[in-house]
Image 1 (tube, rainbow, N blue to C red):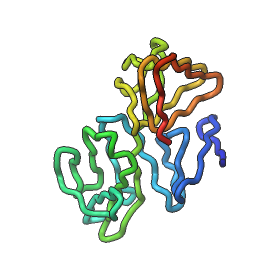
Image 2: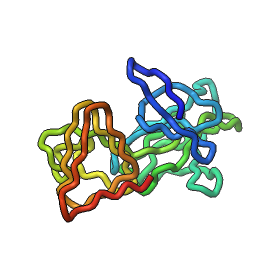
Image 3: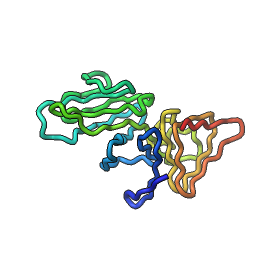
Image 4: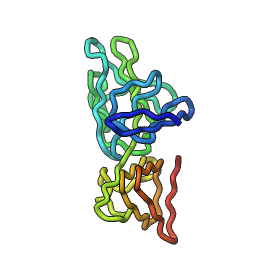
Length: 184
């Protein structure tokens, strides 16, 4: 396990299948060699991806869902795939890990990887209260969950999440008769 410091917080990451997976997800402008830049978003949320090359003439955004990169066109989830910035709209959390890049004048740019992340707000103690989550809905099996410093969570319904990160002095209690499934 490796560590680095960002905004006075210690962040840890692990190598898995040659891609850096952050345990604490950040909107970071740090480029990590050939690893995709993580692009956290809420399930059913939107995000704008911007090319790092603003001097080009021809822009084409592409997607890789696991079978190589292909060109995108405008549609219900994409706006502006032929421009410097592309908006991704109403993204299903099942798209976790999809990769995007902008090809500028025939040269592929940085790769962005979708992540669906929600933070615990702790309005009440119960996992089942959507108001407790920064995204306003319950996490699912393709959403990474972060419980910040001092957060206390009671899992009061059967629940699932992709990953669970507990900051210092935070806790998760699972009520009798219910399960919390952590996929990764």
